[in-house]
Image 1 (tube, rainbow, N blue to C red):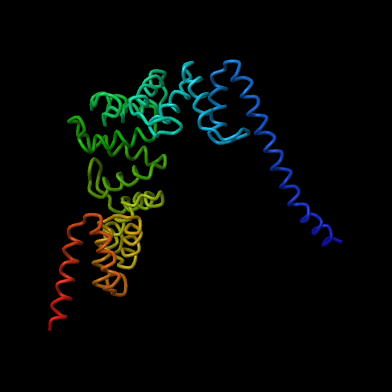
Image 2: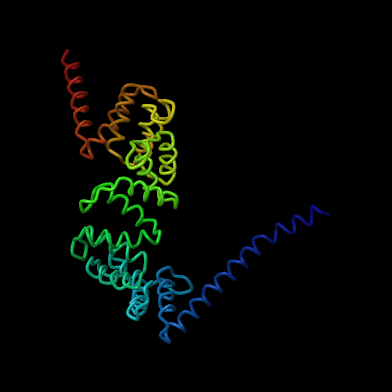
Length: 315
């Protein structure tokens, strides 16, 4: 009897799943209709939400043109979220002709309303001179303002500015602190740079073992530079026991991701049999990839290999 009940229950699963999908579709359509009614009456927040519906095709036909139209209506009413989104559209050329100037115009409007993402993007725009006057002073000011709100990207970017000495402000201790805060929020590149700071003792007490922990977190976040640095850690015993096989695996990952330095290093290890079985043919393959990206040492190694083959052929 229990078997028949179980079989009957299993037979209902596709129907139940289909009903759930239909119900969800109805809810999405009703949400879009509600947004349209409110948007047409002039509600800026609803206009923004309706624009999002058109961008994603949620409950309405997919249409970038209609999305931009509603987004602009909302932005022109002063809705900060719409202003920031419209700026992003101009920055990326989504539904409009790409324009750094127009992007900056809308970021300024949203930033003046204390929109964190807009303030961050405006800060970056000033640092790069994209659509606005290039100014380290203004760029740093906007980044500081946004970082004070614990904005993850702003924390990382400001930390990198302090590490580089942007605007003549070299602050390694503050850079390390900002990287750590952004890393705690899961920012992969912040994890990488905080790992580097720990490894080199930049702005923080040197701690190679803890550095590896942060580099592993960065690599999990698909930071290719972290993968290559981990390869060096395992090669040289920085914070971990030396392990040629692990070094090779991390280097291979970084090389596969397109890092010329990792590709060159992988070539040398394949040629020497470090962490792997020696394979001259595969070594040449990686040398060629690195050389194709402009890596001079890889090209020099290829030249040497070619000369040796020519000399051997002449014997």
